Each structure stands twice: as structure tokens, then as C-alpha cells.
Amino acid sequence: MAFFPEIQRIRYEGASSTNPLSFRHYNADEMVEGKPMREHFRFAVAYWHTMRNMGGDPFGPGCAVRPWEDGTDSVDMAIKRARVAFEFMEKLTVPFYCFHDRDVAPEGKNLAETNANLDKVVKVLKEEQARTGIKLLWGTANLFSNPRFVHGAATSPNADVFAYAAAQVKKALEVTKELGGVNYVFWGGREGYVNLWNTDLKRELDHLARFFHLAVDYKKKIGFGGQFLIEPKPKEPTTHQYDFDAAACINFLRAYGLTEHFKLNLETNHATLAGHTMMHELVYASGQGLLGSVDANRGDLLLGWDTDQFPTDLYLTTSIMLVILGQGGLAPGGLNFDAKVRRESFEPVDLFHAHIGGMDAFAHGLKIAAKIRADGVLKDFVGTRYASWDAGIGQQVEAGKATFEDLERYMLDRGDAGRNVSGRQEMLENIINRYVEIA
Ligand code: XLS
Ligand code: NI
Ligand code: NI
Image (cartoon, rainbow, N blue to C red; front, top):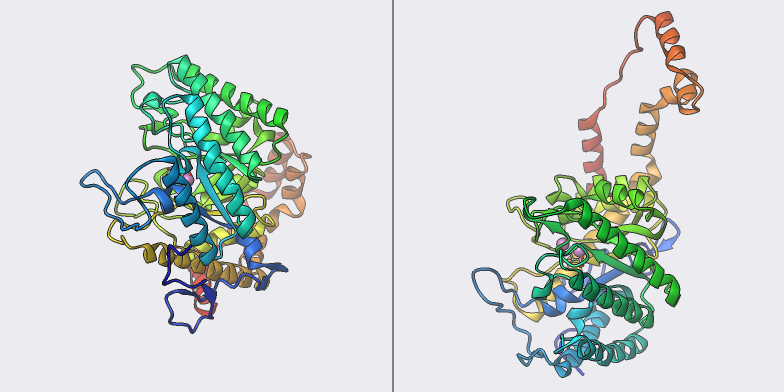
């Protein structure tokens, strides 16, 4: 078996290496803050992009060179592709992968045949997992590609479509459990609307919540121990996606009594589509105790859609790792490269370059973040900035011991608020630059 005959297992060669097929920073066993790098990241390959994206766009068909593809969408091809995927991941040395049910096996002529197709491929995935030790970070169901989902899945106006989606998620949960998956993701596909003239928004949200409760019930019933994750995205394919951003998702989970069963899987390109930085989304979710996992990618500031590019920006990876370190890790979540090579990068080796670059950018970002934390430069500054809350009136407010009357009395005595202190943004940006240089 050698679908990538020219490629050896990718090794760590250190920062001075000029070998593009080596890691310069990702050194799986290297200890950072008392934990080996591999455990900080729990990197995963996204099956849909890496194995199924042929580079098609609205202006032309796919042109990726994938010598193992026979041009069919058969079960045999799906099985062969699974072998290719595991050779790729073994050579890349990633510990996890993620998939949608429809990425790994083709749809049949009815649900029963579709499920049987999936079972045949799952058998092979299981075999390959056992052979390589590579594990499933999460499974999910594709509830958006087939035309039956044209108006959504759990939020479709057609109750039959809700039922089909439920059956599909039921099966995907069983398969994820069978493969030892440690999470299960719900990305809202077409759960949203394009136009409010034809949409009963409240009813659709109620249905979505019902769907999640049914999934929680079934999870308990089969004893699936993985973490449920919702992946926010503000738009695309619909004009307004219900799982808009971290705040909207958390509000939805609270409103429908679901917070104890779900966390969030945050994606950089979705954050920026929502008009947020990735750091905003992470800090918000983490602050609520609901940051579960990350879809690692980036968008293009000049384009307005989900370009799903590989992350290479050290400021981005540093900020992500600062939040992850700040909450003591992501496990059972991980960093899934929900990213695809550009259409112009059509050779198999480009898949390696892309993932190596992403893994190295995160490893580099981790080292920078750990140094920033060890030196306390941000923490000390922020701590001092809020020092007025550590004693006196601030402390009383935080402790719930001050009323409006107390606060008025305090201020009538003082006459005016105390002096404000500069936020020093530019100085802090310069300090971050210093850490990026020395890492
Ligand atoms: C699409 C989403 C999708 C999810 C999995 O924009 O990122 O790929 O991660 O369904
Ligand atoms: Ni994603
Ligand atoms: Ni995406």
C-alpha cells in the first residue's frame, strides 16, 4: 500500500530546517507547560476537505490530481479512499480525524441501503484505526447536501425531512460510538432562512431544540460518552444561520435547557464571517465554560465567504493557544483542520504542505503563548488594570454587598471618579511582537 510513494513519514527537524516536508516547530513529544505538544493540539484531518474536495468552484469543475480515484462514488472506491486517508494521516503523524457520514460512504437508493453502505466502510475505518492508532475526534451527519434538505433539516417546514434527519443522526451517533469517537458535532448546514416572508422562525427554533433534545435522549440510551458540540456559523449557505455565533448559540442552549449537554466547536472563518475575531469567539465561549473544540482554518480578508484556508498566521495561532492554555486545554476536543488546499494547489503533495504548515503555525503559536504566560506580561497588565475591583468599593460590588444607594453615597463623598489609566494598546502590541520575534 503506497498511495504517496514519494513521501516519508514527516519528522521534526527543528527551526533551521529548510526541508518543506518536515516540521520546524511541531515536535509531538516536546513538553510545554507540563504536557507534550501532541496533547495540547489533538490535531485532526477533516475527511471532507482532504479526501473529498476536488477543487470545483462555481466557475469550473474540480481539477485535483488524485491518482487513487476511479471517478466513481461506489462503496469499493469509498473503501479504497479510506485506506488512502489512513496512509496520509500516518505519514503526517496526526492523531485524529473527523468525518461526515456522507464523506466516507455513498448514499444508496433508500435509507436502508445508505446505512448498509456506511456500515461497510465503517468496518474498514475501524480496521485502519486499529492498525494505525489514529482515533476519531468527531463524527457528524451531512444534513445539507442532498436536495431533500433544500429547506433545512431539523428546521425544514417538511416534517418528513425532520424525521429523515433524525434517522440519519441516530445512525451517525451509533457509528461514532462504534469507532470510539470522543465528540459529536452539529453544524447547522441549512438550519436558517433565506427569507422571512416564508419562514416561521419561532417554530423552526422550537424544532431545532426538539431535535437536540432527541439527540441527547438517544445519546444516553446508547451510552455514547462523547461530548456534543454545536458549531456556530452566521451565514452560508443560508442568509441567516440560526447558530450565528458563540453568543447566539449559548443563548439558544440556555433558552431551551441544553447547556449541560453541549459545548461549542469554534471555527476561525465562521468567527470572521460573523464580524468577530476568533479570539473574541474563544474568549466568550471559554468564559461561559462552553469552549469544547476548534475548527482550525482562516478566511481571506478580501473575500466574503468561507474560504476554509489553512492557518499560517502566528498572531492567530498565538491568540488561539493563549485561550486554550488559559482554560487548561481542550480535551476531549481538539484542533480539526477544517481547511482545504486552493484549487491551484492540485497535487497530492500539496495536502502535506498544507497540513504541515498548519501544524507548525500552531506549534510556533503555542511556544509564543507559553512564553507570554510564563513572563506574565499580559496577565500582570490586565490584573493591574482591574485592581480597583480587588478592594474597597469594587470588591463590595463584586461581592454583591453594595446597593445603588451605597454607590451614590460613596460618590457623593468623593465628588468624582478616580483617575483613569491608559489602556496602552500600542505598547502591548509591541510586546506581543517581541514575543513573536524571539520564539
Ligand atoms: C461548514 C462547516 C462544516 C462543519 C462540519 O462551514 O465548517 O465543515 O465543520 O459539518
Ligand atoms: Ni467547520
Ligand atoms: Ni466552515
